[in-house]
Image 1 (cartoon, rainbow, N blue to C red):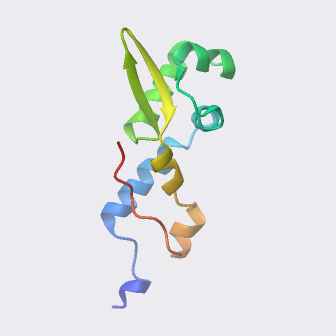
Image 2 (cartoon, helix red, strand yellow; image 1 turned 180 degrees about the horizontal axis):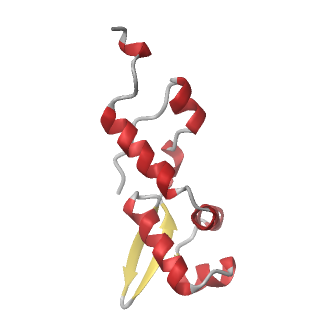
Image 3 (cartoon, rainbow, N blue to C red; image 1 turned 180 degrees about the vertical axis):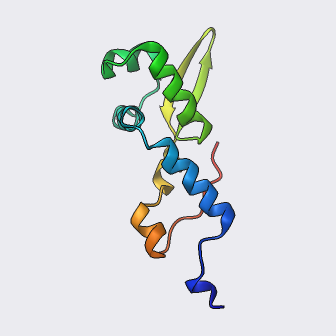
Length: 111
């Protein structure tokens, strides 16, 4: 069988699926967008103030985004600062590229 016409390799498909799942929520999209546009680490409180979403909800979404490495956590004493992971976000393939078999970036090796 021509590998060019076969399905995406399972490991890559699972990695992309975890990315899509992490971004399958409007609040998480807003948080990623906020951090990407600010380009500076932000505390949960700052994200709450900017997004208008409750603290526990923001914390929950940040954990999901950190699990797939879209955001990185910097510990400073008893607080945490969150920043966008430029390496992962820049590699994020579009759904159309994955589905249509267009060249997509390899899953990144993130910090």
